[in-house]
Length: 346
Ligand code: GLO
Ligand code: MG
Image 1 (tube, rainbow, N blue to C red):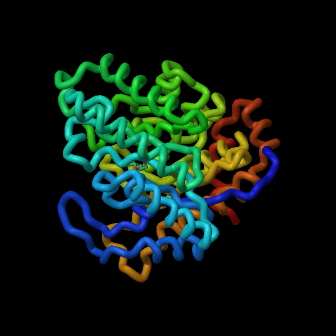
Image 2: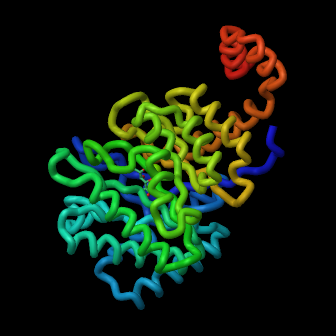
């Protein structure tokens, strides 16, 4: 068992969302950023993750000086609240310029915009005091296969990563793979794809990954195996824990909500690999249910953290010796039941 340590927790302002879905409008009124920041600290969280335009709203319409001013003000606000910025991610999927993709758009002007916007995002990360850039490659993929050249798209992705790595030699990039939604097929659907892509860049050591439980499940994979795989490469630099009921829309359910055993195995993998010991955060990319009332607005975050910590205890009290004996004896039926009994408790 890895040496015990305290985990540090994180979420993003978008995780206190208002309940809209493709079929209906918000069900809760929007809250201010300051309110969200206060709730974060009060609920036992240590860090906040940001999109570039969470940090500097309407970033595309602002000058470099204005971006610097606003980002620095935010840094001060975070410092006053005793919160750090975990990462900054360029939100490349809202602009009319990225309708057909960002780094892999067929339009050179759009690709240029995507890169310039990302370099600005790196500036914002520097102002906020984090060196971690997260890339969720939302629209890098196709709705119909004939619309893009897959190999050329990979080359464009590598060129974009190279520009980021050259722009700032101290940043690290975590790719957050997701197999689908909004696209039919995304170009970097799994952790294996992300880490292979890293190898083609000018500085593979600075390109790692972020695992989101729901995205692994959408790819038909076990998130615990994805965690072990990334950690075998020393490349798990961030984490979006949540849950997902099979192959549906991206549900971002509370951690463990759908399958406690799959959640337990993720925590066990994190414990084994010593996740967090090099300053990595446990982030929850979870959303309230559309039905959630305003007064229960934080419950999905508080509950995810609580479930995580309870599962850490379950991982630390799991009888590893007995499990090893059952494994050696190939008694998988007993091992299976042992896990269930352990999770159910007395
Ligand atoms: C969507 C993603 C998204 C990212 C976020 C940070 O499916 O999970 O929430 O995590 O934009 O890049
Ligand atoms: Mg995510």
